[in-house]
Length: 162
Image 1 (cartoon, rainbow, N blue to C red):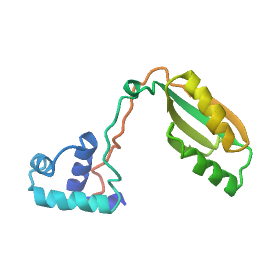
Image 2 (spheres, rainbow, N blue to C red):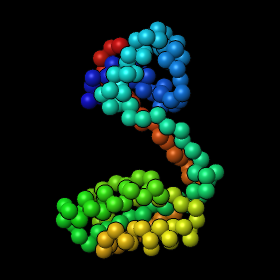
Image 3 (cartoon, rainbow, N blue to C red):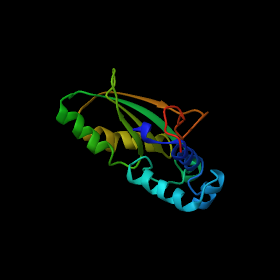
């Protein structure tokens, strides 16, 4: 999929990952192009699914979500139906920021943001444990966030000229 991108597409994606509030004109100026073709390229990148959304990234400590947990979940039921049921239920909870179906010992890794340890306990008891019979749960709590990157590195290799 990335092979269909040219250098200009990749630069647009890099710039938007750094600052999604850039205008088409600002992007065009940085790339020494005009705004209309930049607008068309961004529209195409959106239509083709390269750009999924534009968001504001919040400081979780300022919105009363200071406790960040990575929760490893091993299910008892490994049937297709059991895995799908757990996945469809767990993603409904706003505390769950990320849910990954994994290979290895654990079936899922969840990133959960809550106010404090009491709220995490409540989430486990009243939400997670009510979905289905679970095997093993292991929780790890973030002590310090050293890096949180939302931008994917995009290589300029193997592209068309823009």
